[in-house]
Amino acid sequence: MDRAYPSIIGNDDFTSVIDDRAYDRVTGYVKEAREAGCRIIMSNPGEESVPDPVTRKIPLTMIVNPGENLRVSQEEVFGPVLSIYTYTDLADAISFINRKEKPLALYIFGRNRKSIDKVINNTSSGGVTVNDLLMHADSDHMGFGGVGYSGMGRYKGGFVGYQAFTNPKAVHEQGLMRKFTTMFFKPPSTDRTRRMIRGQVGVK
Image (cartoon, rainbow, N blue to C red):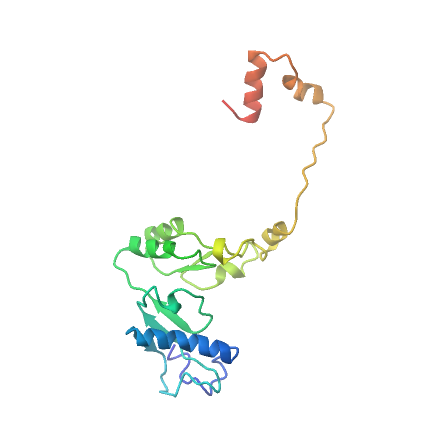
């Protein structure tokens, strides 16, 4: 981040939060965490006076192991504040994720295929991208949407999105062979016809 954004306030590539209310909310998360004694890491290579209320620019700020009672741990941030939770066992990380509401997206970074699959198979989220960001939402071949708290439906995404807004109607027109295809359904039933019916519907 320091290389990408060597300056903040006068940097047109570095965006601002949308309004004063959002600025106060996001900086409030950091203030509350600092007062709670959390370790705060801020990307500010130019040592500028940021966050800046005039430009509403907030540097990338990382809060290490904030308590679950803090607002930054309970609310969607929608700003450049990242909570970092450390763990020693992957099972603890999975348990932490599953204690929270189901996220819209889950991002996994790592090289261990077994660990990656373990996270995917034991958590629930709207979508997953491994070793990158947002790419699952960019594909027209996969639906994008949430699950549970993060929203329902797959409105974006090519054919998947089309299916979300359509209600297919099943239509079956019986052909000339109907007397042979339905003869087993007509009474009286015998052991033979019952066996054949079960075979047609996939019941043993």
